[in-house]
Image 1 (cartoon, rainbow, N blue to C red):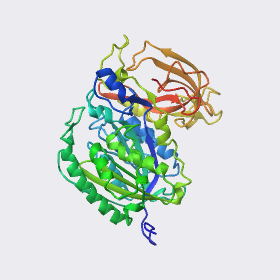
Image 2 (cartoon, rainbow, N blue to C red):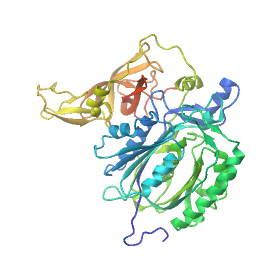
Image 3 (spheres, rainbow, N blue to C red):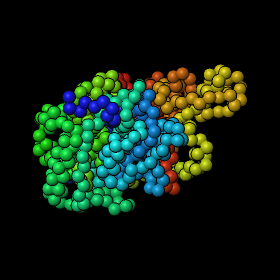
Image 4 (spheres, helix red, strand yellow):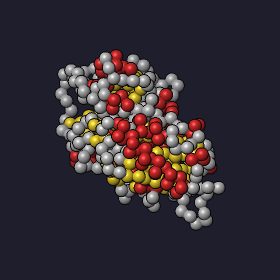
Length: 487
């Protein structure tokens, strides 16, 4: 059978995958209704006012690891074209939120739209179990094509050799790349919008590069085009991707949804997002191929294994796409900084203290409380003196980020400062113990009820003096009966 490893041959591939799609959706028709031009069909995903590429990357990574808890991550690679920080490594916040050991390195692959697929290809050629995290937030001028066609999303893939408790769900068969220097799309540092050359020029280059990489990738993988069961050709140059897909010789039923209509093009994160989506749809022993066009062409070919049947995605991409909630265009512009509404007349937050943030890293980034070893009382935030029994310095860490909580009471604050008022605070009781007052997000305040179930999500509270204050908020647990996200 093609792709069957020879005795002693090293086998490498994907252990788990997770895609994250923010809940807010901008209906493209709203753009034309608001501006009189622009827009289009379908919708695009929009990162909330408290999300950026770091927080979205954390959410995707949590989903990927939740489906493979036995995977021993040896490195974290974070790729984005829209980093929350320059100079400072963004992957360290992902690392801290996942509570990974200090000996696990965390580094950024940044800048270009090719960085995501490049990090994935490098991990597949590596030797360490690597968590590859991709995230992007796409901007454009109001009414422009990039604003409508773009999307915000993240993906994470655990890449390794597989092993007991964390087998490969897809074996890497082979791949190929083609690189060429030509002006297709570019953005100078500090600019929030990209510029693009006349698209027919880019199409001519991508057609040649894509076919070349495709032919060499199939040869390396040892498969014929007709054997491909799932294919996505993706890239910010939609016209080139569509044209190339029709010339690769695959069966018509192999074409997988590229999520352009429902999520939009998520730049550096998109190859990971569509690959996660394909793996969720594929059965065992099927060939999955990914083609990504950005300053060249990259092709990766996988064959799913028998372990795919037992692998259960923590929150499938399709479910997140279906759970989207509409966002008015005016609020989208405000969140993007394109429109400045009157803020609440309250003092803006001050920047966080670097020493205090470091001293409380496990609480601030990992949402780790403390549990009294004698009474079992859970303290949020962690405490030295137990509220039950009064024991002193007899606590153990209590990881709370993955627990479900119940809303005990809540208040809607329309006066406190927020980029998107009102703020909803709730007192939440967690399963197994622990009570904490926490801000809610992705919530319709009018739909919230006492007794609703919530889960924790890593968000950006605010930014002050160029410092992003990351912490945890709570959001409704998706599913029947959950309160709807804000509209």
